[in-house]
Image 1 (cartoon, rainbow, N blue to C red):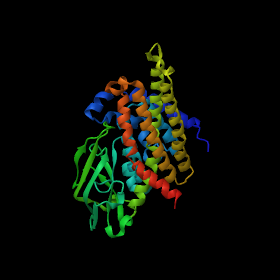
Image 2: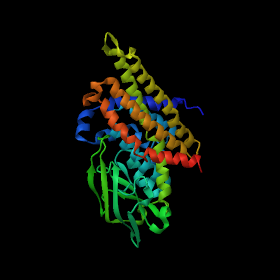
Image 3: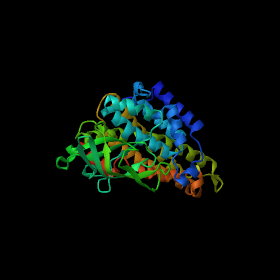
Image 4: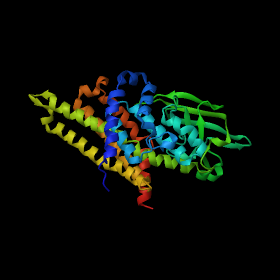
Length: 381
């Protein structure tokens, strides 16, 4: 396995960096304080092609493979400091666009994918419930089949982009007696009768993408809203999680690289006790550890792209990548704050924001405890 970037992958990475630096730099400090989603930034990313990278050209995308998409997302994370915006793009791509692409009818693909690719629609995923987070398939949201389609009743929570999303892929049980085999997936536009965003949920990090709670109250859906076959919702969800766990932290690689470069520059320029702080072993060791973590993370993420390009299952490797990268992201962010000292602790330099944003990576797409369970299940059958 050779994970060196091909010329095309390197070009997408470098172009994403250049585009982000030119078009995706704004007053992130103020928007983070206001917890404000940057819709204009979303549209600019779509103009570059980010949202449509893995989507075939016939549906408005770029028709690229996952390796190229990962390379571009790493470049985006390096060039753009808005982790919330990038997280929203990842959530939309892996839990909305990919399920529609892989399980949607031709009519569903033609209707929704071009609008997801060109930035018209923001996608979101409605799966988690208060009592069905890690135990996702114990969900209580009910889908009742009628002569005119479906009626959904229930609640979904911790929905990334919920308050600003236009299109949702949601999951409900159509037959509780069947357990996992009774779960089905549905495409739910935001203006669907009986569907509403109940509230916005404030959170620690990635504040520039809102989180919300959804309510289905006698929510009426037509027959064509069903995504995939009835009772195949667990398969749709697991597919989206495999892609998301494997690729959602590609942008974190770019952020970690940016952190490392800032720390090296600071260690060289900051003078204490008559010499650069990088000359002190305790500081130099932190920088070494940050570099080591970054270099061990990159192959794990790019291996996911390689496996999917080979048409192979990446469930185990995606869990490994998600677990390791997220924990390294947190540790690197902590080291960056410590290395900068007071300058890292205050908001104006953005160092503490990366730390707050990194914490969520150990929770979303399945907590790291769940990732360990998945890995163990593959190793100890």
